[in-house]
Image (cartoon, rainbow over the protein chains, first blue to last red):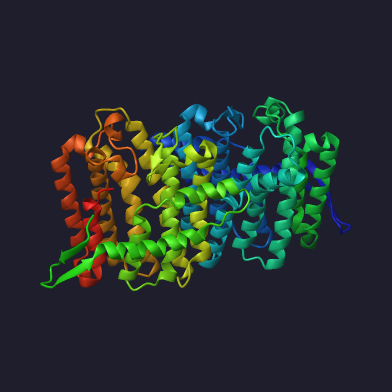
Length: 309
Length: 309
């Protein structure tokens, strides 16, 4: 993981930025808000199952990107925190469903048993459903200081991000591609821009949308999000080959075992790393106009490919 | 099924109302809008799976209640149709997931093979997810002529209706109760007010909310919805005992086979019918202040318990 790093900008100023401390501070804010977001009531098993996966740690990259992009364009935490939490609820919903036996059939996630291993398949499926629906409710009920028409816009974007046009579409193509050896790069890109990219992109966009950023800014952030999204997935594929169970918190070598076509299987490890690095540079280039204010997002872009889990 | 009937109101006027023709006309409107709501694009199998269940017929009670309550308080079709479609998407999502092998494991629904029997378990699960997310997007993108703050309110209500506080909570308690013989009436009511009642209630409410009804009106419609929701479930339980596969479009006798506690198993068939009738009368009493304008909702309340499927 990156620790203290020197961010080189187009300006001659070099700034020391402690990303680890910054991420840790943002994570604490997010964890506290997520902790408050769900109270256990009857039927307890359902709420416990929702909390089990929602509060299982993880990088909290989606909510952090959302918070940081809101701050970048002058928004407040009150405006953005419900959406930041909702993004993590959506992310968690997708993980719970992807892990189910009928899907990827995973036993471990974030270093813990997967939801269905603890609560059973039916409750896990329903906990995922509940988190998805609650995400929309949570934004609609708790967002403060944002004009209602922007909340409606954001909800449209979030729906699009999850539905057949987004996460779900990516997962279907991923499932259809399993075991096939003739998957081309277009299909692989479709899977990952939809499964991973689109949620990261929406996370970055949503914070700025809520804060009322103009279209030009939104387009830059959208491209930044798309670039880091793809870089993230390439890094993930590489880690599946090079990482350990301890580092990853989930079983490594799964792609190879499932005979999945991945970026490393198409390009090799070294070429994959180079492509990921290029994407991160492209992402950072989108932010140059924000100067110093973009330092956190630039550091996060670097972190995307430097991480070990 | 009711055909032409005489609605008795508190006023001395008796009005002849052709419910069958009215429902058929509303259904045609809804079917046309649902047909337009999803276009098949890549990955085709997912969109086909969504359309398979969404366009499988059915009573369209949720969207019709939504349209009728909007009209009752002076709203337009443009205001309400996207929400009417979204309610049917949510209803269809819940049916697809409830039918999955890990849940109720049903082979038939609306007279056709269930979604997972045709498209496989994983695609069916994902088609349900996609319909749920798309429902929120559809409202946010397509609703016209309604102030944004009301759309936000509606989305909050719909999220609450589906999440652990609604449909999903009801389904979890239903699953937990399976095979148990000591289920009391409170638990049975919890299951059904959450699994069925809450969606019908929200359907009635949402049309009037979008049209800007005041709180007093919303409360009356909310109670109307809750009463017919429970009556609907009692009638459903009775039909499961007395109906045929041909009438129901699904396997009858399932509750008894699964040793499920139902209203007829607690109260007997006759007593269940009496209670359902009482609930329908209570529902209709809530509407007396609307006089003639309430005739369609009154007729629908009668239809709820007179139907044969």
